Image (tube, rainbow, N blue to C red; front, side, top):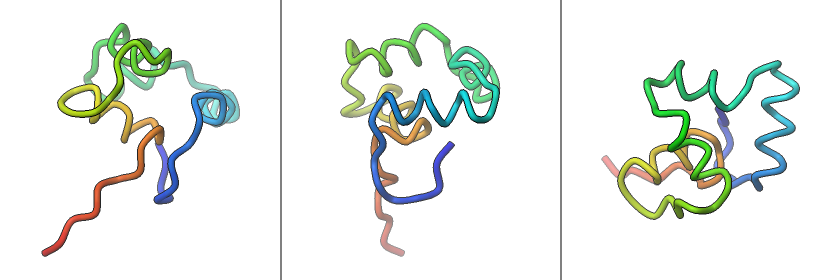
Length: 70
């Protein structure tokens, strides 16, 4: 969804999706995720601190991609 290392706000994510002509449900299905989980992360009822919620937050750009050291 995002290629930069800065986190976006939920409103920015929505604007990006509108510009691409996609819905949250489409993004969820394309990435083999439950649409309800994606909506929960976007609405803040799932914080995205770890696990699937974190994966979704990173995918949407709500959180920066973790830095990996090789």
